[in-house]
Amino acid sequence: MTGVAFALFDWIDRRQGPLGQLYEERLQLLAAAEAAGFFCYHLAEHHATPLGMAPSPSVFLAAAAQRTGRIRLGPLVYLLPLYSPLRLIGEICMLDHLSGGRLDLGVGRGVSPYEVGYHGLDPARTRSMFQEALEVIVAGLTSERLTYRGEHYRYDDVPMELAPLQRPYPPLWYAASNLDSVPWAAARGMHLVGLGPAEAYRPFVEKYRAISPKHQDDPRRLNPHVGVPRIGINRQIVIADTDAEAEAIARAVHPRWAASFVKLWADHGDTTYGHRVNLDAALRHETILAGSPARVRDQVARLIEATGVNYVICCFAWGDLTLVQSLRSLRLFAEQVMPAFQP
Image 1 (cartoon, rainbow, N blue to C red):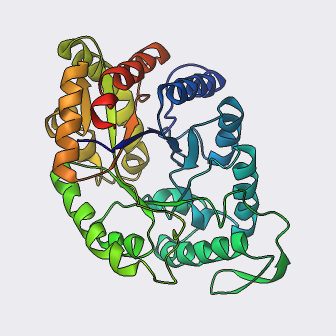
Image 2: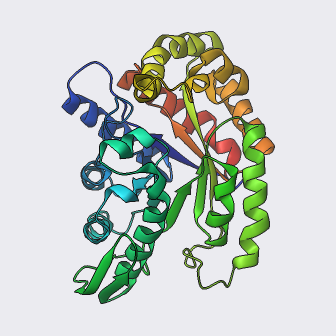
């Protein structure tokens, strides 16, 4: 079982301690991930919730670009309805140059109606806003002047003084939370990321691979510069010397992450995502991997076999995990898990 790439995912969820310290520790973890050979660092965008202390991913990624030199960096995802597309075009170009062409560009509209609602947007309109914003961004990254006429955005002959370092633009990613969104991403050749139990994600992978080749020469394909699209899945991970130790750590740190994950929904009396924070279920379904290196290696093997993914995104820092604990998990994963899946 070879040819699988491994990456990092991060919410930068809040825990005790100064916020500046949290950012610094994440940058240290990112440097360690680069040294260990991880492919990319993917950062979530959230608003008004302790789940995400990086409501402006570009700011943190700019800092990360200066602390690293090889690992790729990217938002997963920019919530496009919350941005001026014209302004975001400039940020994308700046980040691509600041990172030396290491930017990967995740885009989406967000899953939380409460986050976009706090910004004064009607959640029912964000799908069309997302689609228009993406059209504007692609046009702006590939043109010397931008003209666009849409329902939500209008630009008239705007000079594009900045262009990305990567041509035609950084690779595009899409995070799919429901099966109905897969055909759209597959037809456009976008890298795909998801989560959930392996058996539930397998249909995502199968649908993507059934649709994507049929659109190889489609002019609407947004990632023509990408060879084989990456289809990935996200997992939270704790590794220790023994299974018992790793599981004990997971049980100790999970409550803070769980509280952060559901807080915004719970504040509105919404139980939609309550089932996702049951630790026993997560361990049973292996959506959280906790164990010795041998156990986690077996879990990753089952995950890849059951889903067919070619990309595994690892979250080593979440909840009340300390930097020391996160670094140990990352090191053990890189030394004793990753080599089994790479040429």
